[in-house]
Length: 266
Image (cartoon, rainbow, N blue to C red):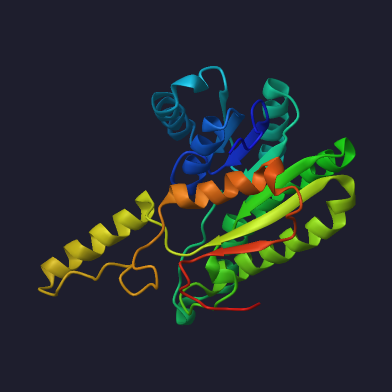
């Protein structure tokens, strides 16, 4: 299926690794021009080189813009630079930031603030100026990679889950506000995804179990209905489709991708 994304300008935040990287690769494979945004200039350069190796036809279609998106001015500067380099952004894929997990007894006011800065405002600082530009242009798509923690409260992920819930509300609310202006906004809620971050956590837990003489932790996907965790590419496939004209009547949707771990109607 031709997703009709050839030549479109896609800006991906959190693009240097994990789901963001997989999304950037997916858009490049569809012929889009992609602006990669992340905090680390070195990480972005490595990601760009890897993308060129994996998608040889992407030469000339990748640009990198280091920015700490917790800073509104830095986000605005990155957006301005990306549009100066590639023209107006047609698609924003937000995937930057992750809140630290904290036990309920250890939560302090600063932990709640930190979670909102890490997950909520990293999205808002890029989305707020861009959705207004898209509305003025009469076209645009925003996809927010959020997380299942915003719908199901996890005791060690309350601050991050609150940020996720806020992002879902903003995604649905802005979708309604801007639908008449030609802008579509959707969110995806992944469950467990086999990113490098998850691999590192599993490796650390396995080493700790060995030193303490305990059995290695079980496969995190073993108890899921699908029997495994998701691959980043699987999340990216849905994101790329939702960003395409093929999904022209999908807006305001919150798409669960947790392998049926939490059977919910609403």
